[in-house]
Image (cartoon, rainbow, N blue to C red; front, side, top):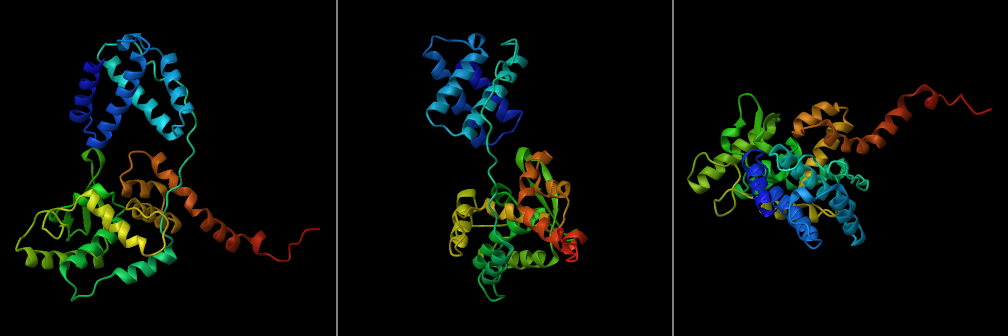
Length: 303
C-alpha cells in the first residue's frame, strides 16, 4: 500500500506542483489510514471499501478531531482513490460516496478600517529612516495593498515590479501568475526602498525584500514580523493572512464586485472568495437605512 502512496507523492509534486506542506499533509493522512486498516487485516487498496473509510472517520470523530480535519482527511482519500482509478489499480473511487460532517465556516479575521488608519500612520517611515524600516513598512503594507499571501510576498523579485505599467506580477499557488495594480505612491516608496537597500548591501536586482543579513525574507520571518507589528495594537490573534483578509474586506465594503476581488486575490473559484461577503453586511445595513424611502420616511407609521 505504501508503494502507491509513494507514486501519489511523485504525482502531487511533479504534475500537480503542490507545495511541500500540502504534500506532507496528504501523506500524513494516507499513512494514518493505512495504519488503521492494517490493524484489521487489510493489506491492499483493492480491499478498501467505503464502509471502512466511514468507520475510520467515525473513529476520528469520537476521538474529538475537528470537523475541518475530518473533511480534509476525506478529501485526501478521495483524491488518492481518484489517482488509483486513473492508474487502473482500483475500479472505483470508494471515498467519493462517503458522507462527512458539515464544517462550519470560519469567518476571516480582518483589521477594522478605523484601526488600520492609525496603524498605517504610526508605521509609515520618514525619508531619513534606514533601509530596514522601509523594508518593514513594505512587509506590512504590500499584503494589505495587493492582497498577497505570505509566500507570494516572499517570492517577489525586483523584476516583478513593473514601474511603467504600475502593476506587480505575483506568483501564486500552482505557480500561476497574476498582475495586480499598485498605487503610484506605493511604487515610489518601493523605488526609494530599493535604492536604500542597494546602497546598504552594494547590490542591484534580485529578490525585493531582504533580511538584515541580506538573505531573501521567508514565511516564518514574515509571520514573526507582522505578528509583532499587530501585537502592539490590541488586535486579537494577529497573523499575516489577516492583512490579505483586510484587503478583500475593504474592497468589498467599497462596492467592488466579488468577481474582481477573486481575480485580485488569485482564487481559483468564486466559492473561495464568497467567505468575505459576511463582512460587508453591516455596511449593507447602513446603506439600506440611509437610502430606502420606506426606512427614511418618518411619516410612515404603523397603524
